[in-house]
Length: 519
Image 1 (cartoon, one colour):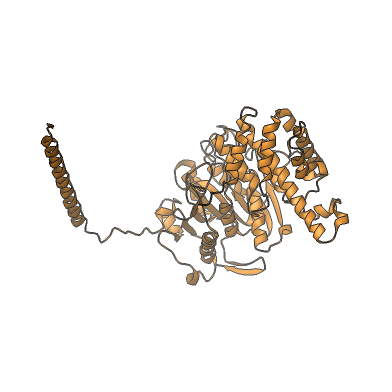
Image 2 (cartoon, helix red, strand yellow; image 1 turned 45 degrees about the vertical axis):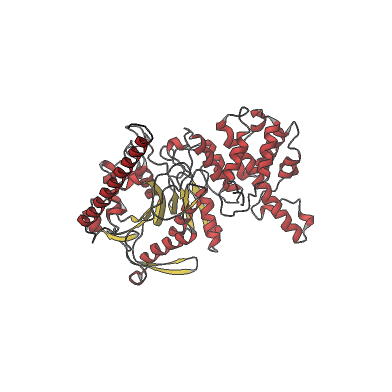
């Protein structure tokens, strides 16, 4: 019987647990992520170093430019992972780790302000426990899964472990977006060329997966510009770290800041928006604040009680004339009254809503709720468009919304989590893109319990609800059943069951009486 391999997160958690009593649990993620960064940077450095050796360019091994040309950090000897591991049991290992981080940041401007400063020395870690943690991280192949956003995923795992009430934590409704969901968004909105924006970018996972999408479709990463914003200083630093280590150039604003109160990209017009805003964020503004914000122009002011529609309108205000947005929201945003109803109605009337897709439950680490993927599109008119060297002929889709329900989709992994498979993602993308095209009548069809194209009249009849189950046909598998007859059969079976039970009880009583016991 083969032993089940532990997940990366489980391994790290068990190792971090060894730090118990030396480090506050809330610090575990910072310790781990800093070390993973060092390992990741070093693995990429060594990979490039081996390339140079294989190319017969040994004389260039210590020349920085031969690494930076491939968007890889050149690491001085004191910053390399093998140097850290070699000295793991030394009394000054904490100082050596701090020196490694400081040296990397000093030599690489894109990391300015991103790495912890003198962090390990200040923690006063038990050197034996730190050596044990280093040994565990040494066993991780950070380059094994090229699509994995390892920093984002580990960060989210630790947030979930402690249900932290930080401004970036689970208590505020923020969740790391699984790579399969980001991959689905990318396959739908196809961010090949132009400006990509994320108003709540977290650790930068959306951007990481966007670049993976472009690479997998043989696009040109140089034709994409990235803009993001993040409120929490720690997460802002992680995003800079996460993107810099992958050679992804991004403008995350001059500082960590609240998107609503201190918009770092006020005049930005994005071709693509990808986001996973905090779910159902309460008290996001004061009662009398942000009432005249230009981002709500033409709409009702988003209610103070829930920021869902504030995020939507922020993104709408950032879309270019042909811009497309794909973002995740809790299902509650699909219906409801008050100002949310007024905004939703106006979004539909303004023909911005293109698709609503229900995602399976248990796709996020720290919440099991079912969520919705929204696609907004500024231009649903008929047009031809070149995408990555191919021409697509879009039909006029004004007055229509596509609904897709994926609640029964996905495959289980790591015991309780679900993810969409590559083939499922491809199928959803095919449904969506077929529906968009001029020849859709031959390539697209409504499928019961999966998808339906709905016109404005039907949306209006349903009071502008965006709940897919109101539109997608449900197959009545109970019709044709004679319920009276079925009930008679059930009653007969129950009667026979009770008779058998009574008979067994009588026989048991007789048996006890036969040996002298009275019941």
